[in-house]
Image 1 (cartoon, rainbow, N blue to C red):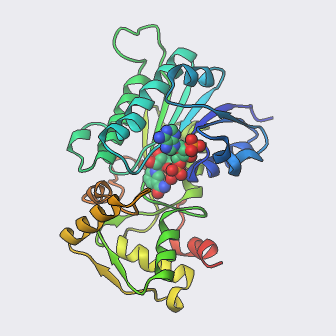
Image 2: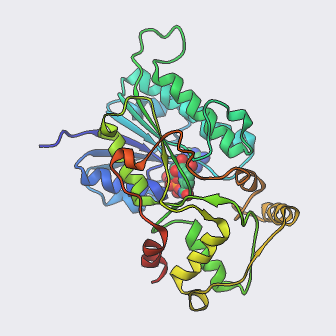
Image 3: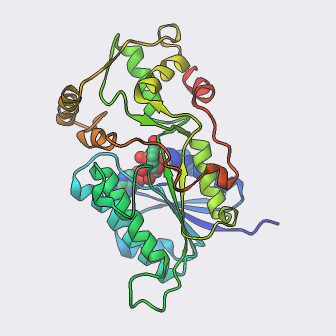
Length: 322
Ligand SMILES: NC(=O)c1ccc[n+]([C@@H]2O[C@H](COP(=O)([O-])OP(=O)(O)OC[C@H]3O[C@@H](n4cnc5c(N)ncnc54)[C@H](OP(=O)(O)O)[C@@H]3O)[C@@H](O)[C@H]2O)c1
């Protein structure tokens, strides 16, 4: 019989979180998912062994109570848009809080989903608030995994996996699905950052990587940083064209993509930022694209976890083609 694990999944209601929770439930593990609003947990509520907790994960006392009694914590909470304070709150202060809670509660394993392009060693050199804060969050956890800050000699630390995915595609994604939708609606695709390079990775491969880390990451020593990238390097323009191909827009050939020069891309992002709601593309998103979102090869990849990454088009056809 497999050992039963108790896993707390922060951000378990989101796009990646839903796939992660499904896999954890399939392992027969007990899963707890904190959420700001119970209604956000609808996609995971039906899973066997899963408990939803309505709470504010930023409230350290409430978070510590939620963490207690679990064997492992998975963190998938992140934002793509916001100001400096919002990025620090979600990507740096939250890891500080759950790291303290894990150390105090004797939680032995943490799997943290960061992002390709984040760098825990030189976060301040990164081009966007998103990437800088992701790098700082990693640094916080790397230090905590060693047993917390100096002077906290009584703490044992925890086993730490940091996963750095490139852009993630799959059923429920916002990225490819949005590009397919926009091309259904509009005759042209004016695109900022058209030449930016990505290595899109399937959400199932990301979720399998989380599970593999919880199972011991093929014996790789902790702390481990894993670059989670798909088999193809594609520009944003090529990704837009593949979204059209997969969804059959204009017979699969898609709309003409107009690559915007930098100034026009920044103007478009500024205007989008003025509209209510989350922008399609913010200035900070454009800043993130100044560096390639491609595996550096300096760290291990999915293959080190025994995962063969899937290509985009055959899978995108299955969910965009409907
Ligand atoms: N999607 C991608 O292409 C991609 C690429 C690279 C890296 N990643 C990383 O992968 C992880 C998961 O991404 P995802 O696409 O699954 O994200 P997502 O769908 O936006 O889900 C994030 C979850 O975090 C919670 N959350 C969001 N903002 C919060 C806030 N301010 N305070 C507390 N909780 C908040 C939400 O839970 P509730 O609403 O239930 O509270 C939400 O379910 C993130 O670390 C992300 O940076 C994603």
